[in-house]
Amino acid sequence: MNSNARLQAALNHRQPDRVPVDFGSTAVTGIHVAALHRLRQAVTGDTDWRVKVIEPYQLLGEVDDELRDALGIDVVGLTPRKTMFGFECTEWKPFNLFDGTPVLVPKAFNTTEDANGDILIYPEGDLTAPPSGRMPKGFYFFDTLIRQPTIDESRLDPADNLEEFGVFSDADIEWYRRRASELDALGSVGVTLTMPGTAFGDIALVPAPWMKRPKGIRDIEEWYVSTVIRKEYVQAVFERQCEIGLKNLETLIGILGDRVQAVFLTGTDFGTQRGLFIGADAYRELFKPYHKRVNALVHARSNWKTFIHSCGAVAELLPEFIEAGFDILNPVQCSAVGMDARTLKKEFGKHLTFWGGGANTQQTLPFGTPEEVYRECRERIDIFNEGGGFVFDAIHNVQATTPTENMQAMFRAIADSSR
Image (tube, rainbow, N blue to C red; front, side):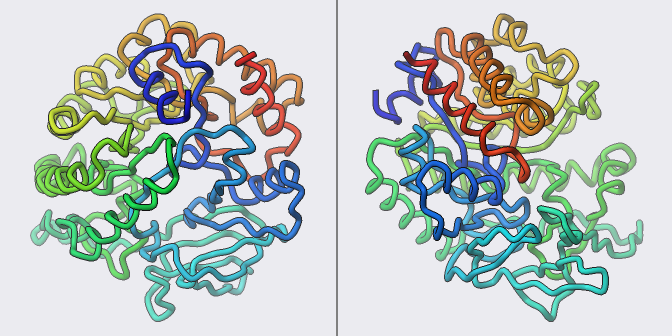
């Protein structure tokens, strides 16, 4: 099978010739640029190559064509035109991380250093605007800076939390058309589209680090409180957001057609390590109606499979996700309570494709031995890949300090599993 056919087989719960592999197609299935830099050197021997930072918020690196082929990665990503900090990935320039890793960043990746030595980054690269992200000195990615305006209950307007949502501009449409042509040139690869504007209440997006002066409810704690005490406000935001998202989905289905196999619709987290933090009743009332509408349109107008990302112990919500129309679960956090791999495959494997779960990025991958990594990956492939319905990826992004020999053991396990 080629990569496209392999991914389609897995998504349709047919046994592929080997497990399809994704590293780098989305902002939740990537590799930190520092780890990727070391891995690429080890695999290709090229010591002069600077990896591009294609997701500056988490500092995820680009898995380029040469490395993708060398590692047997099957999936590429079609991400939004602008990054989390509001600029496009164009006109690359050199940058060094705190640990000395040499990388390339977009031209508008403009930063300053504060008195503590922390790195501040600015929305749209505009140094005259208040900074929207901070990387503490010695660390590996940015934290969002909360810029919450004073809340006046009498003046709260859902439109303020809708500033970032809009029907695609001509520039957006032209950008997607160019990307469609680029995908055609790549040949038979699997493709995941990250859909902008359909992640209802994704807390990474609520503070809007791409906006210079966001209005509305932008503080993380205040947003979660609002889902209880300002429920009508949140529903009004979601309703209009959904209307816009559906229009944009129709546009992209028309442009991209069967070039895409999976669409990443939402990254809203519902679980923690030990259980839910957004309960089943809240999910059914606030989120599920909009998820059903978006999933229904995708399934009616395309052959795409729909992808929900939710960290944590979400086994209780899986029947709800299935009923809402989702086809794919990520990151499959097998270390969380109630998320045993065998149980998940047995109970939900006929309905969901598990995209992730292949390597524990909290424990085994960063802190285990290569032998432990290899055994865990082989075990997860044996469990999840039977009968299809599995795309190998780690449990969320591979972190910066992950040992190179452990990443190599992971890819060795993937390759050996097909023999």
